[in-house]
Length: 117
Length: 109
Image (tube, rainbow over all chains, first blue to last red; front, side):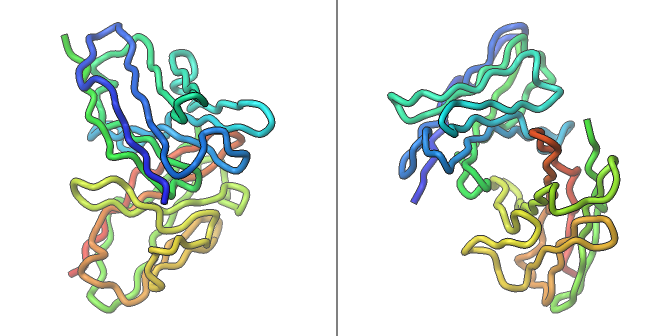
């Protein structure tokens, strides 16, 4: 059974960087058959896929076009986790953020991140 | 970025059958879009019902099925139950990028 546990601050100031981590148990972030996603949801924007990271002999990242200039998703093999960094946030980035596994079979618990001064 | 379209709302009678559809602004939806269907109930994370057009997870009730229909992805619910009342989201793949639809609020009444 795969379990995803999210962590990170719930409040970020405008123009700063939003950082979240998703810790994996029951699977490996560097599995050749896995992929690790970030998604967010807000009343104004609905569900939004942000991007993913995966390993196929080397690391790959794929990002939503709207996020490409300010998003980074990184694996951390030493801790078996992956992270989301979103730069230059605005109040429009306020949302519930989720991490999810390949096939979106397993999800983190979700974390409300509010962007406010 | 492509836009994925869904019916905003649908109503089905208990025991009835309903089909939710998922269209793409780029043209016909094909198996190459690897359509997903998610169910979300209030206060919960989305849950995958269908992936890659018509594949089910172990928890997907047999009354749900996925297909391609008339250039769209489709989710058919046969024998609706009160617990199927939820928001349903479609999700498509476009050459490395993935896009959610706006969701269909399904009422069982």
